[in-house]
Length: 232
View 1 (cartoon, rainbow, N blue to C red):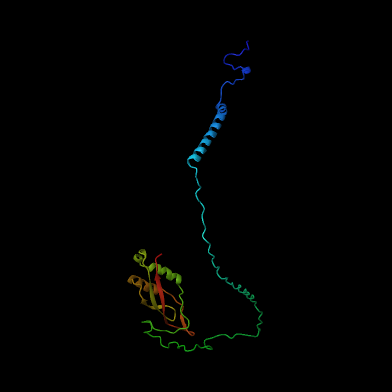
View 2: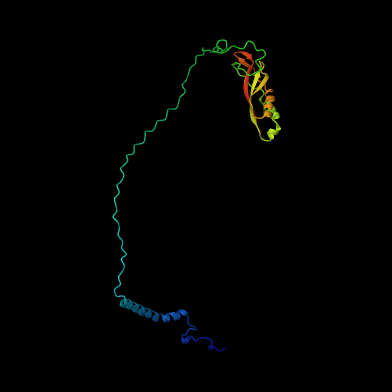
């Protein structure tokens, strides 16, 4: 085969590249651009000096006003902190010796009569339980059937008022005999609803009390209790 170069292949001995790049062209034109820029700058400076020979820089300085001295406030003497309060000593229970021979005599109403206490009523006939009156006693009666009263209260609550969310409190007077049974009830303060007042009277008659005592004797008494109807 023949090894002679064809027309399309570059000859290595000639030293020529197949094409010229933009970088090569820039390097070749650098000298002309540089000296041309220098000549243009010189011409611009000469023109400025010829047409404006007396250029002066503007005054950009500034002045400061005199500072006025301010008097400092007088020094305040801070008092020293108060002395720490000493904590009280923990209390110590002292030992007490009780003589075994010391006895306490039983307390009875006969030996310790209350002062200015009216005697028990001698006549408890008809008329005492008709209307509320003052009845002296030393031991008040207590309700013995609270749970039962609560059930009766719900049963006697008028359904029309309960469904409407209407409730109220009725203040009742109870007349209780010597056995603790309710013999009479009187509405002292109305709830504002006649049906609630009537229901409170029915509930009041179902109360059971312990007997009231005046000194050591059972006595009939009038007491006052509120009965409240409340929807849940």
